[in-house]
Image (cartoon, rainbow, N blue to C red):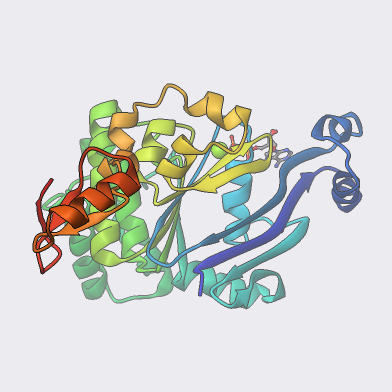
Length: 318
Ligand code: ADP
Ligand code: MG
């Protein structure tokens, strides 16, 4: 089962938003809604996030990414459409159930992450646990553990102002990790970081994801970041999801001109691998077969070479 399922999600801001959704369904454009004073932030978005993957939502500023992610944890109600966390319908939950989901299943990391200045780094990291009423001892242990995971081992007793911006952002990630939810929502969490630190954080996130098996929805406006860390990428434009696919799929089969134009400057050597460009043999020859068979297969494939396989199917040569 998918970790998160979104079905035909809409978010329209303004008066009579539901009517706005009806107009969109009947073919009105985003601009036409704007003339009526409505902002169509998310339009008919459907996708599934698999457990344990990094699902990237990529799009320019204003394309609806933050609105989308805020609907996923129920911070904002969808104007129309459905969201399931596992098999639980978010819209059908009571306030109480929603709070439980936000506390136990989904945590969120923002770009501008404000640490509490008069608390230690460790207390900041364990802040979510403090709210939950977890004992001090357990909080400290969890904070140490999470800080170590984000490369801040030994910083628990420092004060926030002793940390660089990049390190403070790591505390934000540590706080989300102490909550120990299986889903992490990250809204431009690395966007304010210097390129080098950012790359470092991307690597760390990929490692964390692999070792902790979290499901991560990661928002970015940076295509290279998206391609680097995303198992799947949803490309958004003007509130709509234009394409969902792996980096390879999007590069090799862009769904439309917009996507094609968008990805044209991506360094393909960083994304594509041998499998994407390999010339596949039409026929293979077993090492024990003779020249007549070889000749027949060569003629069939109209090729001047054949891959020859050993009995155990390992390549013997060409
Ligand atoms: P992104 O995160 O991709 O930059 P947002 O989801 O923040 O995009 O915004 C998408 C659109 O929705 C923008 O046009 C923005 O101005 C509008 N918007 C976002 N939040 C609100 C709000 N609370 N009220 C009205 N319009 C909003
Ligand atoms: Mg945003």
